[in-house]
Image (cartoon, rainbow, N blue to C red; front, side, top):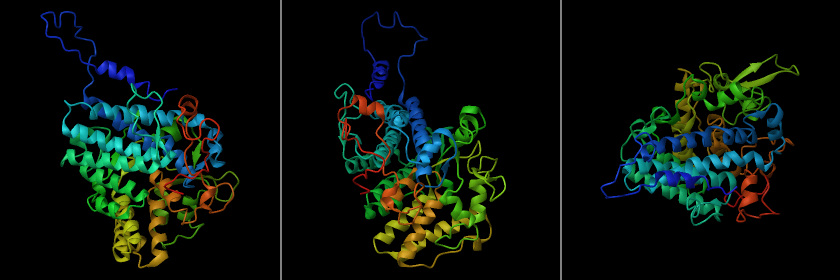
Length: 453
């Protein structure tokens, strides 16, 4: 399948013919759909972002991270790192076609407001950068020019991440002080302002590129409180429920669990945390549910889909948050040699966690660590706090698994034992001769990408 052929009918629908003759409008059908305005298309782009960050991509990554586990049928293959390329067809197409291509329609729309175009740039830049972190080299410079490039070339991973940051920065300059709701977030997204969210997203990808100064610059202007988190919105209607809930309860019961996951072991005390945290049990109760008797062969750890749980029907899923922003600052400042600043940002997270889970600050005591111990506490806090978020998968590879997450296959914490990338989808391998290594040497799960080598 040529990846971008589906955009051609959209261009045709959006084409506007101009005619000044007296017969104009004579044969128009007032009920026929002619033009899709950018303020309608932006909703589709937002939905594509939600799906990219919270659907199959996030579930696959959470199993690879050992935050969750494959429990049954196809998802058991995730535990053995053995799904095939066809598994990635829809994941790739959803992001490129529904997300990146539709965002480009808005960016090209000269009649669209700066606000709409700015949001489109922030979202498109985010999806481009994230696809590069997941897959390595991906289409970028030729990705949204279907009339010119039926087989788009694959740009280098670092180039695409940098280009994604540039798009986000361009969008930030256009959105002003518009809130998420005012900027066509509507019932899909909520949070503070697009500007703050954009800065946190740019900081995320700067950190992934190990550009620590740029990460600090953006994160300093990023999401400033938990109330301003950029998150998804969900309800109780069947197709409006939390995406994880839909999968675990409505679609594929028992496929995705957390039995014997490293994250569950950190929170239930099976594995010691780098930073002693009495409130672990409170976090565990938010994330997970016990099914059966501990120690019995049938015992399972399930995701908490109950009302009030992390993955209830109406629970929001994070896109960019205060927690991530503070932990970006903590790690970047540490790597710039500013340990006092790094410690302060880690402890900001600890204070916020205490406020979220308990009125007792001693449940999440502050750290006083320095050196390697401090860095491990920062990275482990991020691993625990950002459950189910793709950024954890990026961090695990970028830091060569310095926090020692056990490998699902061997129990070894070696970084090269984890899937180092998502697989290029079979449809791309079959139809685009520019896929790296095509047709016979396409990278495998364990082929490291250039940024995370």
